[in-house]
Image (cartoon, rainbow, N blue to C red; front, side):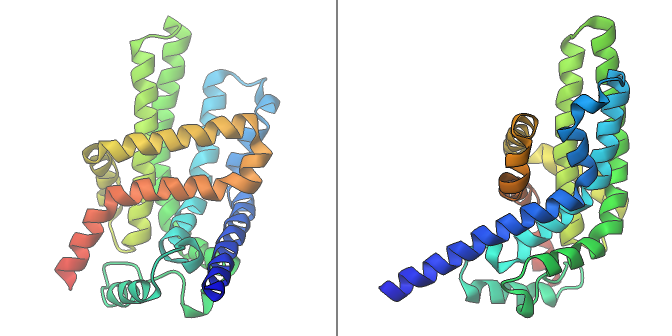
Length: 260
């Protein structure tokens, strides 16, 4: 019994350390976004539309870090505490045999590592995730500027609320698309863009849950930014990943079934 307790304690300790390491890595790889959020007062001289545009640009060029984090939540053993090793082994063997689905981003030698395999996944996913982010970032910029224009001209109306809701939906669709990029390395960009929106709309309960998670993240970042950066980012994005993973799961399972 004591051996099992010790083994469980060690596994939990490794998971906690992995999350803390991921937090530190995300501070660096998401630097543009973190700087804008943490030093918002420094941009007070900018007009609201320009500040919104700066925030969208910073968000867009920082999101490849999220794609690598999604890869960590997908494959890093320390991020999948409680999963049976045999189940993980069979899943990895299955997806390794299917060309359309990405092979595990963590290999056997990386079982207890975080920094090196994360950076390897970040480099491998950077181009495709950045292109995907630029597409969604352009849509988000138009919506954000339209919302700012609506506020300045009408002082806040139903149109403003609708535009802000569309901004939130677009961000979740973007997260969904990033997970598709992680899962399907050969998917075409138009298909990723289209499915990001359609899957998020079809699985709207998980979309609402993802919006709630993002709301918690933004709220804590604006009030206790250092706490979120050093202790909470990896955990919040972990919950966000599982929201979008539920949105895309049936597509991945269908692809595995067809290719198998």
